[in-house]
Length: 430
Image (cartoon, rainbow, N blue to C red; front, side, top):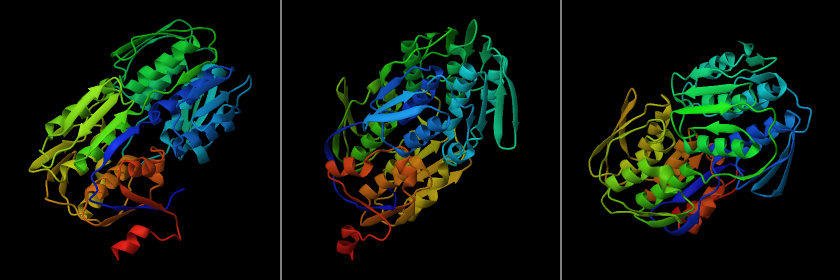
């Protein structure tokens, strides 16, 4: 499924919607399942393109993958695994690099193609490599592959230059089967890191400090299979909360965890939206007049880079000027040109975007430049006057399951149109 989205803007969204499992957690839990030869069952797994790619990667490595329900994946690596993750799969998704640590820990060797995925900036793998070398691995990088060998991983003290999510995950997984104690300082603190640590602990790993700047991992001889529920997706939840604000709507996002979205909630309140957080989820009621605000993306618990484009779409209609500073990925502003096609007034200067609010956005044909930028263009289309066509929506499918169905259930006029089909929305518009 791909094609394009056609959106007729102007509808005020309202109602309740349930958030799915976290993309950025599910992919890492699938990779972590390689650490045992026993079967692992993951529930609340989002049925998105990236999950399907990761399942294909695991199958090429020799694991058995089956689905007992659409959101339940059974993974059985078995005793014998292959050590190589091929280019044709890894190149489709950067998260595939995360199999490096589990393969090295389990097999003593790994050969993983250099990763691909959204072109939103240089996500360097230096910290992955240096950290694994400190655990005793010998690593060579060349001809498009990372090759790692180790007769035995041994615990060490590792300080990351930057709280990289991927490096934290790779080193955490490798350390679970290393001999002795590993201490990793300046680790990432994202909720998905905590979810991975909780999953590994349930498998028998000994981990302390997840969610803090320092983690301590005491290696064990063996991990076992478990059943585990993936944490709700905070970025999908945040996107739906912005959908309420940008359409002056009223949406209850069920299962969203307020503690995972504190900065998003804070900024929604800054722009004038009403936010009610509870154990059941988060409710947002929008406002007719959007206040400007400034945002700087930072590692968790700072403002998430994955919510930056959605807020840019929202602030494009603010009553004043806002500034967004992107501190994580330098190419996250690729979306600006497309948003400006819809009548926004945004200019960029290095890592800063200056957003002069306009009274309205106007529907236009646009292309999704990446996953989150594509979702943000859908949000802009919901608020725009007229019809917006969003092309290259395969990017959006990488991270959002049934996106258009959830929005339609809230009152949006949105259609997915496959190649060769005609949209009823476009017919009416003409």
